[in-house]
Image 1 (cartoon, rainbow, N blue to C red):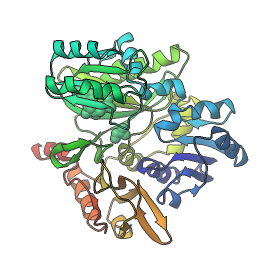
Image 2 (cartoon, rainbow, N blue to C red):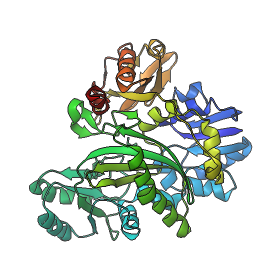
Image 3 (tube, protein in one colour):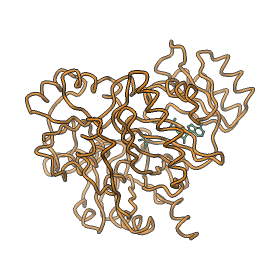
Image 4 (tube, rainbow, N blue to C red):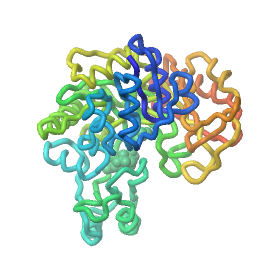
Length: 427
Ligand code: AMP
Ligand code: GLY
């Protein structure tokens, strides 16, 4: 089967790497791709916003499945356009993708189906927002509606900061004239974890858990980023918690969307806070996490393409998935300045040596080629990923590999996996 993969980040390199190993695959195409993906796929110059062009390409190349990696084409309705032409697609249509595209859509769904989440109001009034903050105090969380690459959320630790943030969060909302441009919610205390399931209608195939590191610097200091590293599984996410999340959060969500006539199909990313009162939903994403995907793929024993086809075809009840016993960790090698301004175009050397370290795979996130040179081309540039028997071993391998990469303009956190390693040490 021919497959078209949409996307250009580290997540999509992890997907191309895993898809390329499929016995079902004839040829993998990717757009826009990156130099890492180019090792697994033929890069095609398709504008993914141009749905008609993507459809033409799929018909011409007899594409059996389109795999959509990032959220933007999903919320833009690429899956709807492909399905209307009877082209198979992995990824949800526009309305179910609103789970990620709109905070208030998800909060309403939670409220309507008793799904555990932070107490909240949605509001279009700055005055109402201020009154709510005065009443509830801090810490408190303000969220702008719309897609913001993880930057539309303000966690205010005191009341004055929260009141100051009201104007900012209204200004960020991508739907300022709508009836709920802003959500204000209770601050949840606990440990964060993410969980992934393949979903088709009411069918759910549980995958695995992961934990990422959102702050830019060691010891969880500095501004939030898209993620500076991750590991899988997340030790805080026990079997008992998994059952609770499936029964109280994932299945009711899948059922509600199916009953509304807008069934979900694709991977569902469940962002959770594990509180002392049990797991609560922080957010949904309608795609794999980045960099969480980079730690899930090396652990997956079964064939990804088979599972993605089962998702698209609604055959998840017949499917199962197995995982390696090893844990995986990924360290993001980022451009100095990220998540603020940075300069691209510096030369990177040493990837071959890094890839040769036992258990290590380096995924490309923001790179480009210039002749035989590899250059940085983005904020998060490489994802140095390692398997190991323990988080401690995986982490040693990842840092050994990253030390072999010559890129003085880059930086990385040196404490990825600290929570899990502290748990291993405590045992
Ligand atoms: P979101 O984009 O909704 O995932 O929020 C981004 C980050 O803000 C999350 O990963 C959490 O670290 C934090 N956050 C969001 N909502 C809450 C909440 N209700 N309580 C505590 N932290 C939160
Ligand atoms: N790493 C967080 C995300 O993919 O949204």
